[in-house]
Image (cartoon, rainbow, N blue to C red; front, side, top):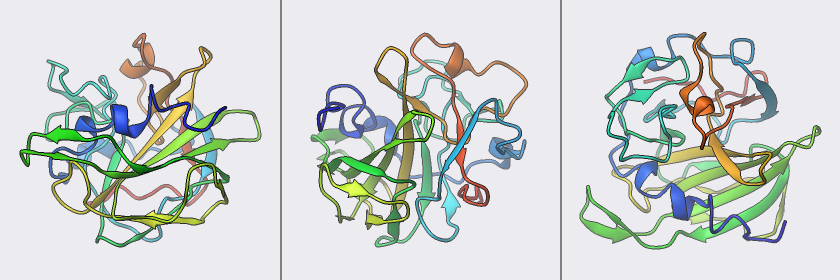
Length: 239
């Protein structure tokens, strides 16, 4: 894949801007993860990731299985990985927010290469009434089964890697921050999976953990989410 070939389709700068934290990250209701998601309860699992940071931090917005990336969805509801419908968080949110002090070390979740490291294009952020740019890192990972993933780190204060650079599991890739459309210091973490059609589609790295059908998997624009975490490495979802 040529370097930067995602830039026109799924780069955080193009798709995750307004939906990736244009409101303060909120402390979600415990109903969001009341099913206690795990590799055993998810409909699919590919446990190849470590945590993107060391330690535990309060979680904010969760992945919206009801049309992630479509923050103008008129339903206004968020569907969590447990199948619960809530309304307290950012509609269309395509990842997870973790509230942490600015300057927290962020780490590569697996071996791979740097697909993009830099400033996203300018975008208007309504909550703060300004045009802003976030510092973003995207890493590409190929697992042993040939699955192709991109991990996305948003709102950084500093980037310590460059485009095309090989990266190893756990390597520091930058520091968390509050850049871009963000109301308080936090990390936005998201994952994309390459689809059979050749494009990349956003997925929930905690998978789908309900008995009902995942609305994002059923959507013509969506795909199946996957539990990505190695044993003991899933970032805790805590208030």
